[in-house]
View 1 (cartoon, rainbow, N blue to C red):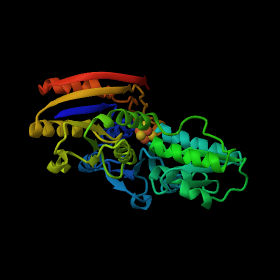
View 2 (tube, rainbow, N blue to C red; view 1 turned 90 degrees about the horizontal axis):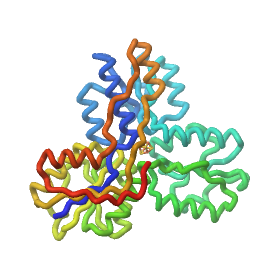
View 3 (tube, protein in one colour; view 1 turned 180 degrees about the vertical axis):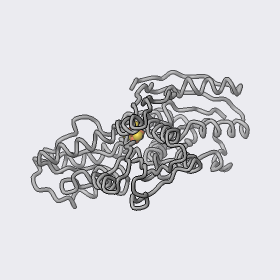
View 4 (tube, protein in one colour; view 1 turned 120 degrees about the vertical axis):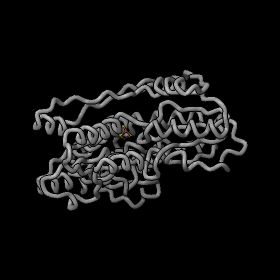
Length: 351
Ligand code: SF4
């Protein structure tokens, strides 16, 4: 069996940053309890590893003792949550991805200008809940074209749409098309809201899945961008499975599979992909082919709230070194494990 590895896959800059925030706090706050509001990123293994290090994940700030340290997850929070944190005297460290913060800022700006905002996304996703909280009177969520007749629009010439960062580009295009048809004067966001990591992982799967017999996506079921990758594979006619790790693969999936595409959602750690590769090679033999579609070089620095917190404890705020070149890192790992592999450079972009 040929194992095709899609590049890019796995951790994005926002996830690296959010994980680094909790890692740094664990180092700094030796013995002090660290609370995280919601899952820091939507991945079971990442959350379980932090739980094992004593981190407590909460879904309500009422469960965080007054004066404690709390981290806001990469998906962002509403102003209401920030206000509760202040009221409880919490030391709040904000690990919101800057690309989510950008959508918050757009929502605030348009609401202040008197626009009604149509937020395309999944109503119950934490990111959408957080963005909506910035201007609840002005924002209505659109999950599909079927929602459009139900919208309450005051002035179609004062209307703008924004999108959740991890949507399927294909679904978003359909919804945006329907919105433009219903409201021809609707304004577009100043720049694309679906983030670079979502776009690149989806376009890699779209480019590669058609020539494969099966797609395995490493990611958790509550990870929006991981689920979208399975949908994109299926949209090009290739069956796809979402697995948290190698223990979830099922023998019956591999009958008549000669070419298997492996990718990972933006919150899935690379060591889970490596474990999966070892398991598949052991069971079915074969070789690995890396297909590089995009090169990513984006990195985010530590959030200002963490830097301030570190300085308050006389610690120099420096970020950790992280590996962004998944392709080069995997090649080194494959060499180390003496697994036959080649790299196909199909790079169409650099972000
Ligand atoms: S998927 Fe995009 S928006 Fe979400 S954390 Fe990663 S870079 Fe940020």
